[in-house]
Length: 551
Image 1: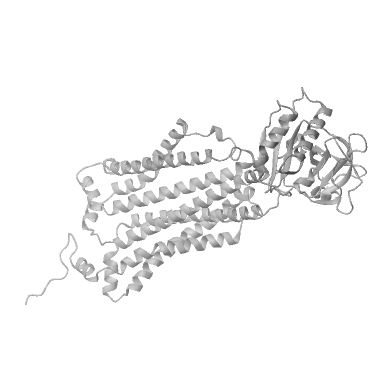
Image 2: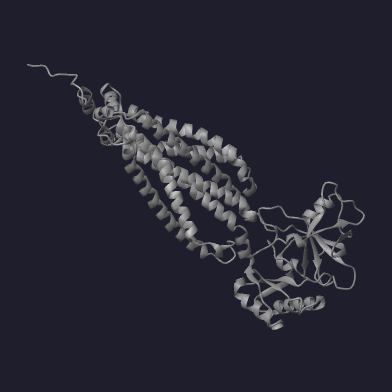
């Protein structure tokens, strides 16, 4: 998975958290439904049914819900896969190997059955241990089983905690991506296009390699719509790899004892820095003066100059690497060749006439949409060599978009997961409070009969919501703190312990909890105290406590 591994691991964790929240909601739904059917569920046990016979319909219902969810999940995955397949080639690596095959179907089925068993057994076991006497004496306005109420509240606390972890994770990711978009790559990508070429060694030798690229560049500069053109051995935002990261030493200077000096080496044609609009900081650019015969020259980037020559100018110094000795004639600005989210590496630029290479990317700056000259680049290359393949043809804007695609995708998905978790947590809070209000009708009615106002009963329900969110929030903050370090590798310019993100997530979750309690709280104001008093006076299975006086 390479550099994308940390982001994929975080997204897999987010998917797992979201699955747990959905499962907790499903368990809450089943528990609430069973609590409203207490009398009905107690009768089979009283007639001699075993606990499994009582629990079996509940497990079947749970299995049906899980399998239905699995089917919808597969449909959503199919749509998402179609969407990803429509992306431009190269934006998402290894797309060819992605498909909904038998393994995916088997995995989905196993997960669905596992979820049904894991989260359907709790309500089933609760239903199978119901007591007939207690259930038959309870009316619709009673407070219900303390075990059921505690289990419902506990599941909501878990939902809130998991939702907070996702919200806390989405905050730094969003801020990190915003900062990443502000990073300058070190060149101007506007109206810039590049074509990658690899000359066959059986056909081209060192001298003919140089002549091929000189001919292509000269023709490109004369082509309509092209302002300037040149070539480089590795396109910007493309790592040179281990073969291009070479050891070096500076003549007359000892390297730092704490490191083994390595610098990326790029071979550039004359006039490369001008069309790229890479800044010249000191000295001169590499140009036609850097010929095959004569002093060997090189240019270095700002990072290398600052690291090895902090107190003096590097101009005129001799650098030696496997390409040979070269004199530094210029210092240019840094380019983020390894990615916008990574600091620039030390870079040495060598002229192509002195260090020819078979593979180069021809770059051209245009005065119009660069894709309009794509055919021109192809025609020029094929005019020089009709059989020469072109391995990649992209605008620099497309290359930049690919460089930020994975961070953009990761941020978008994590934000969507966090939003879904927030909505599911709100749904869980609403469900538990609605169940609680329906089960406490008698108690609420008695309070109102004894003088409690509607505001008092509303405050009672809102307080219950705040307590659930507060407990879940504390658990979630602890979990988020413990898991924050796992995001270190995918953040740019933001630490994993981002206090504003923690505060915003906690505030958002608390406001959501209060909002989810509004409807259940308002429902308490519509409770008729007379109905509650009537149920208190005459309860099922008992004698009336109050009798009418005879006249």
